[in-house]
Image 1: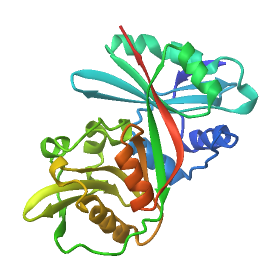
Image 2 (image 1 turned 45 degrees about the vertical axis):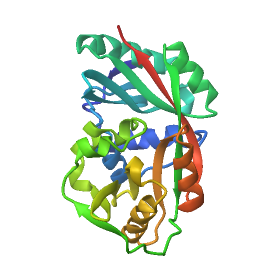
Image 3 (image 1 turned 90 degrees about the horizontal axis):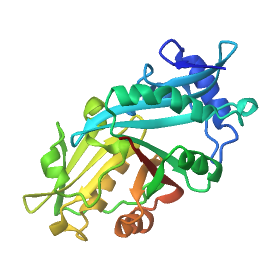
Length: 282
C-alpha cells in the first residue's frame, strides 16, 4: 500500500472511491460528480495537501484536507475520510495522517480539525487515538421551510458583500469550518446575502447558497431577537428555494434557542448530529 498526494488523482476516480467508502456508512450517502466538485470548491479542499492510499495504483482510501488561516492560527480541516471495505483494518487512516504530519509541522500548522457523526464510535476512537478531542456537538437540520406569512415591518434586502464586522457582532458562537469567514470569502459569488431591517435598523442577516440549497449562516442582533427577524429571513430563503428542501448544518447544541427555532418555527428536522474534534499541534 502506497500513501501519496491526491494531486494527480482524477475527480472521477475519487468520486468512485468516495461513494464506495460511504455506501455502508452510519449515514449512507452518494454524491454526483457535480456535487463532489462543489464540495471541493466550497470546503477549500487542496488535492495537493490531501492524501490517498493506493493498492496497485488503485485508490483504496483517502483524506481530503483543506487549510485556512484565521485569528492568527493555521488550521487544517479533514473534509472527508473514506476507506473501501476490503481495505479496512489496516490502519490506513493513521498511516495517511502520519504521512502528512511532517508537512503540517513544516507549514507551522496550529490545529487539526474534523467532524464525525455521533454514534460512529469506531471512527471516534480512531481519532482519539490520533490525539483528537471532542470539543463540541453540532446539529444538522434539513427539510422544507414551513412559512408563508409576511411581516411588513421587516424589510429583507440582498447585500452585495459580506459585512463581517457587523455580522460578527450578532454571533453567539464561532461557526464551524464550512461556514467560517475564510471559506465563505472564497465562494462569495455562489452565495446570496440577505439583510433584515426593522424600523430602518439593520437587525439580522442570512447567507444562503442556492446551488446546494444550504444556509451557511443566520444571525440576529441581540436587541432584535424574538421579533420575527429570523422568521422573515427564512421566508425569503423559502422563496429562493422554490419550496424545495434546504439544509442548515452544524448548529452548536448549546444554542438551544436556535435549535428550537429551526425545528418548531421553521419546520426543519435535526436529522443527524456530529462531534467537532480538534488536535492541537505543538
